[in-house]
Length: 170
Image (cartoon, rainbow, N blue to C red; front, side):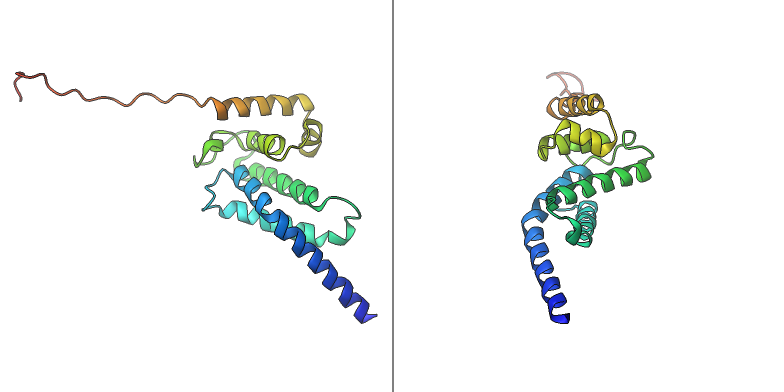
């Protein structure tokens, strides 16, 4: 009996390690996009990844045919939304310190954009996962895409003119 449990636990660990080796990079990239951190300096994204993988491992035996990547991505997204609500009050309100192209977006806009465009999650699935209507997800994705593709223009830098030749220097 003990041998059977030990074998099952070893097989479970091997299966999870294979999954994590294949999925961790993509999940970390998604988490980095969500947190709008720089790829080389992303402690919040790494924390989200660790939580998502730990959650997936804890539920590994209960997946029963479900896609473990989908479950890990769902946990990553819902955890990010929860942390954004906790940190900023509401996921659509505050903006983090600028770090990249997605930093101009609200946390909710980033979440929708990453799920829809980077992860390829259908609009209806995104809406169900986040507890939003399909129309709201569509609007958020459109606004986020527009913001990323057409950033607002910054004012031109002031140009200092040199004094004209022959002008008296004071």
